[in-house]
Length: 243
Ligand code: NAP
Image (cartoon, rainbow, N blue to C red):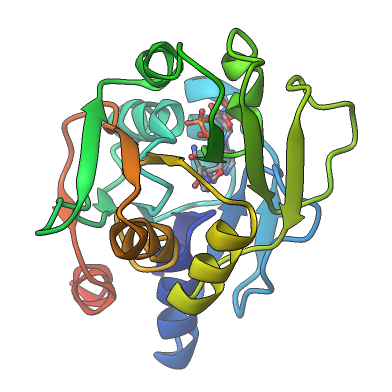
């Protein structure tokens, strides 16, 4: 019997689960448990880490998982590496549902940096008003630059004091609109945007807003993914599951 496990946490994973449910396919979606209220899913869900490669391999065996779809965020590279190794150990077919990186277009003022430490280094200068769109887990890495004002957009309200002294937190989750992001960036008189190159549509509005306002963007490149088969749309994943 087909019994897929979808590694989720993205808009694409949610779209895949909706399509699977509509096609009458069963399966389970897995979340890391980073947010208080994951988006409701039409498939059964499980929450929390598996315990590394061995834990995931054990989960696959115990639950008779037939296929693994890695639909995690392009920066969730540890999970993606574990998925490749656990599938190799258990002989489970694996695909990754991925989205193309964003590319700069006419009017964009992007500075590409290799990783988060390089983005931190790029902010080593006079005080600015920064929209820091890197997610809660990476805020502490920006502590070496306390001179800036940081506009933070987080899925949940912070539960502990933030590691940056001058911040404004907006609690919201995507997808975001151009009009709202323009208004937000104008209201906070943003000078520069820091973004991960996530790709997709849900978080792209801030880049369109930065273009319209003529603002520079420090764009953090994706980490290299492990070698695996990649599929770029939900319909092709359904086909893969069917065959
Ligand atoms: P990561 O660094 O690649 O993974 C760290 C550990 O978290 C993994 O080894 C695994 O723990 C657990 N984990 C990650 N994704 C999981 C999943 N879908 N189900 C069960 N366990 C999972 O991951 P991350 O960058 O912290 O991202 C965590 C989750 O947030 C992912 O599901 C991702 O899709 C989502 N997300 C991430 C970002 C981002 O910028 N990184 C942005 C939006 C959404 P064990 O080793 O114990 O199995």
